[in-house]
Image 1 (cartoon, one colour):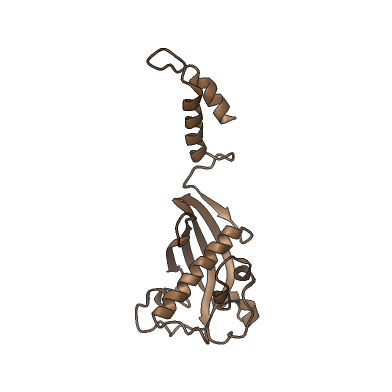
Image 2: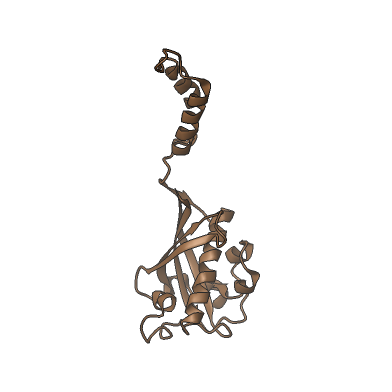
Length: 197
């Protein structure tokens, strides 16, 4: 509808030869505006709420945690044989269109060596990640851990379909300092193994 109105308005615009701007120019302008506005009139770069039913959000969360396991293992801060990432409440998910799609997650999580035989968290089981990593992520209640005991963390990652590694610019922030994960991610400090549930 917006493009039709724009096309009609462009009928009043003349080129140097006093001719009406052609259909190609109007179509290009409509495509440009289409990149800025969706049918719901959301601006590119605007942040919108998302939820755990969005497969791309689940894949992004899985992509982040695969990178997390690799970093923490490389930093000698995670024992793949004994330890698991315990995931509690997924409190908030947002999505933002950037050069790709940026997903942010606010969730409760921690590391435990008491849940090695617990089934994979269903959210990560449903994602299209690397199945070899799924076993590292478990649901807090399946471990007998209350979600409120876990630290609150903000995770962000950008999904870029055109790149070989689709998940880029991962970032982790410990929000409340309870059961910090940043040290496992960065390998900084000698205490990266001290904060276990």
